[in-house]
Image 1 (cartoon, helix red, strand yellow):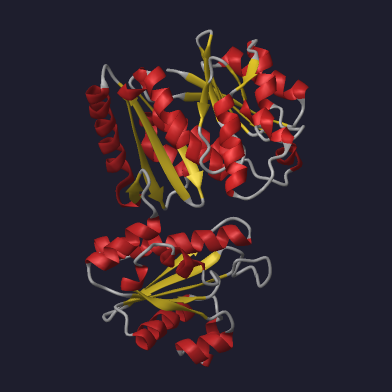
Image 2 (tube, one colour):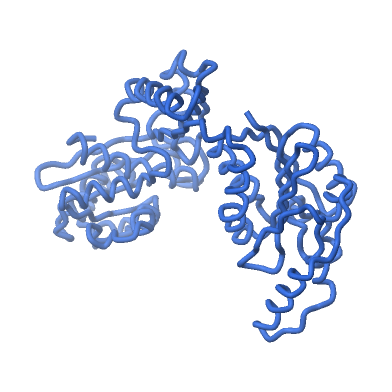
Length: 416
């Protein structure tokens, strides 16, 4: 398997003022392409640190990909240092000078002289087009190694990687086409529970490997299969995927790029039903997730965020007696919230979420993470008690995703 090393440059990354999303994106794309990431460095705008990162990367991997440091200012050092490490002399490329001049002319701005450094490249390098900025990238093969330099802004970097770099990597590393991949997405059991359920499958073999990724309550089971050819790899992949499906059962909600909210939405739409929500602790987050999906207006009536007891009584018809006797966070209140929104909206399905996201409003009987999710239809209302671990935002995300998953299970299996 081919190996890659990722370098992210920029003092802002070291200060924590900017999140390094570039390395995450690059690693994911390389994984899909069958290239193993063996290391990663994040360094500031320092010649010494950038040089060390490139030397380490070239020592460990076939491919070194960096992002950042291709701008025109004095602290944009990546290209100069990379070429120094490789022993490549840079020259001014006339076509790039013209491109830069045209870029500024179209914007009716004078081009600063410092931008000319962006037009300098080694003779043997392939210049990568940047349709969204002034900094072109670079793809260079030398001494059986490949160096890829990408701009720092994520919008520019992602576009360049997908349109310029991916085709070049596939051409130079053709063996990656025999690898087959699939991601199985699970919600319900945690990462350690998934590992236990998978048992010996987790140990893999020479033909396949499994990796678990926990992400906002979801567990992604990533399968990589490598056989004699692509067809053989696909057969191995499907065999393992089927074994995983048997072990995970109804906990599987999707594959690869599937999103839970899109899955739930497509099920509602296919069954010609409509959904209305009553939210308390999630504060509208569940409605946001649903409306993030284009076309959700076809099946989503809307949401009432009834945070206070007064709002629950006025807009959802929750009884004052219920609130006094059982409290806002209770099975009984969730039940009345779901039935209330069902009646108010005229939708086919009414869902309610009430809980304690914390850090306030807790007691021994009702700790942080206690959430009740209710689902009502014309025939009945079911309530599920759930207990989540984490801080406020984590509890809210887990509650919203769990509500979507319970909706999915109801639509497929007829119950929570």
